[in-house]
Image (cartoon, rainbow, N blue to C red; front, side, top):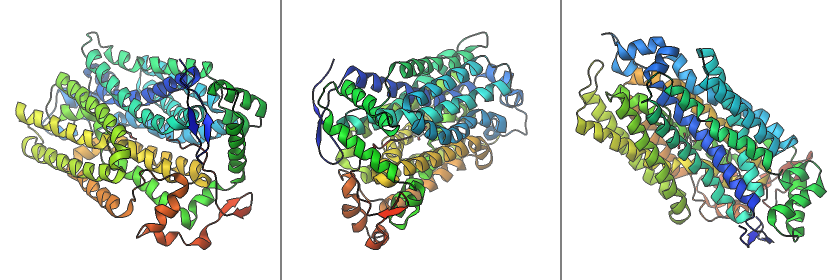
Length: 526
Ligand code: BGC
């Protein structure tokens, strides 16, 4: 099962590295970590649209949906803070857990952090699947959120440290691909379980998340700690022994020396957040934060979380709603694959700008159709218009999935220099989860107030972000991380002004250094 080969370090040195069984198990871990996250993203909208679930936990919403009174607008059927909290609580918990997770990842290692995540997931799934009341349901979602916070911190880091350098970038996008597969899987499960008579279909939907949760837990028990983490915690001999095992060769001295040096440099960076706020790091920071806000303001999670509810709102039956969600989920997966193949060929800017046009156009068309056909008290969406809405939503999802979805994560991970990379990555993750939470908590209320105009609202954001890309986002395709300053920032019409040399300093151990590094510290997405 092992394939021979050499891996290149960030400073261009070749290390001997084979694709060993450990590396393969690691890829499977990536799959379960991403699947688990995606499943949680996709599952809530489907169960929310199941009558038995609504009747048990949200009787007020159930009555509005099934015995709508004159005064309830179609667009407001699902407008309920508790219902939104069922979805959003996961992201708030994830955001909070990230702070603890970054501490355990550093001091207790990646493996233990993944184990903690697995345990959170298992208890969360059990509470959700067996929920008797709303409190149990929300408590379960909060625990799942803690699992997401811990897993998403440790798994990508674990992967990038265990895998040979040449497949690290691929693993970054693999994680995103697995999120989309998790979402699709949840949509498919919901479609199946909604047909179960007896009112327990939603329990099965929530309970099936137990499979990736168990896999992650067992995986964490089986895998080894990463050499980087062992070295970071002073266990040098163990670190070297593990490096030999995972690389499948005794010839690990050069890579081990590189690793020691990287760890020494990383320890010298005493004020990562202060470094991050320095003027010369402004472009990366502004871009990373803006990309996260923009990614969520495309409105993607309105679709990912609430597609079945949305389809129901515009007059689709329960079955058609869940079926349509499966279709959009499949488009999401396939289009992410398109991104993997094209991102290094056509470049980041092209994908983002093309997607901007496509998303703007599809959202405006959706708003026009809904504006004409779905009023407060009547829906006369004929079959052909209904199909057109689904086609437009798919057009929109496809554009997102080959642009803002993966690139929102990829670009920050490839622009921060070593001194600020882990701090930059934490900020990226936190801003993303914060805005994911806001959309999850606000969307159904916004739909109630803005009605079809919600799509105009998101399309206006798409316009703003496309201008941002056009003027302020430089192309980073094929630019090695160490050359980013010279080749990208110093040449940019706007960002160049932040690159004056006298600012080129880094806070290390209370002193200042010139900021040169070997660029190790693998990039991770949350
Ligand atoms: C986003 C998630 C979203 C997913 C959809 C990710 O890049 O961060 O919020 O649910 O894409 O595929």
